[in-house]
Image 1 (cartoon, rainbow, N blue to C red):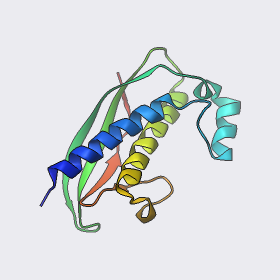
Image 2: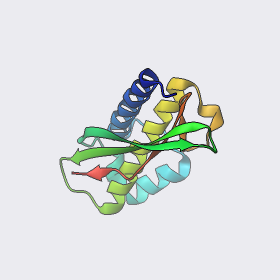
Image 3: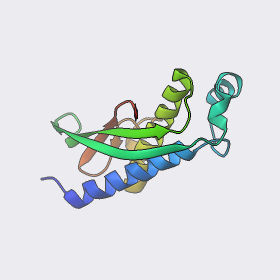
Image 4: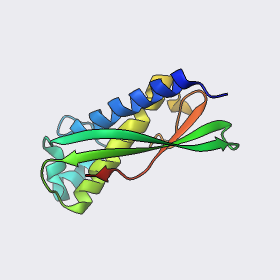
Length: 136
């Protein structure tokens, strides 16, 4: 049976994570290889950006027998004030999705049952995956 309060908490955690990922810049802690790439090729991602999270859409994808949980796909709709190169926008979208999944796992203390990218993210009765950020 689905638990709507749990789902509401997970979606709120995802939205908070999306906002956190959107606002990360030079204050973020990056793995060495990611920071090097940002520093050498995507330096604009180390600067403050004006990303607005418009909404987080949820798509119910049914019961997943492998994990024994209901699967929810999350799609973030976001807006950038200025145009940036596609590869930087993709990296920014990846960062937003990462922090969304991470925040769900930290909220439900399930980070020990997923991988380093928190993909998929888990609550007690749900598993969450993310799609590419939709830039509008």
